[in-house]
Image (cartoon, rainbow, N blue to C red):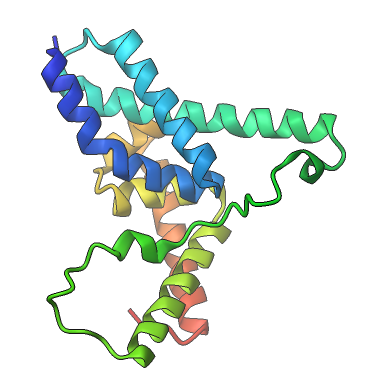
Amino acid sequence: MATEQELNDFLKSVEKRAFKRSVYHVRNEESALDIVQDSMMKLAEHYGDKPASELPMLFQRILSNCTLDWFRRQKTRSALFSNLGDFESASEDGEFDLLETFSGVDDSQQVESAEDSTRRAQTFHEIEDEIMKLPARQREAFLMRYWEDMDVAETAAAMGCSEGSVKTHCSRAVLALSTALKAKGIQP
């Protein structure tokens, strides 16, 4: 059984990665934050008494389910309102800036030129765009395996599919990303 401290430590360790993953899925920071918070609450409420070793897999599964629930709600909401934009705040742009994730660089490090900075920003934007274009299951498998550094078995358990499916999704995602980025002149 996980102690309260182990549960707190686990949640602190996954919050940033879970948020980034959710943003990639739903493409909206506020919604992603809600999904992550809901997932954390569900883990604490319903599975806080489980062993600490089971928490990562339980959390990934809960996070996936909360994301699917969000998409279902959006689909229902879209069906009810013909123009959803009329009900949304005008200041809400739904944009996620991948460069914000790299803003933690020390000012004491060497300052890059404006040209290098612009080139890097454009490259990150192109990579982000291509990840967003992946089919949902490929994107989910790709992000779990390569962003969150989960192994094949963990990813399969979190996605509710076989290890072979995870390998297929990842392989297709890597091929699609590689092809698209090479076509844009971006080499690994």
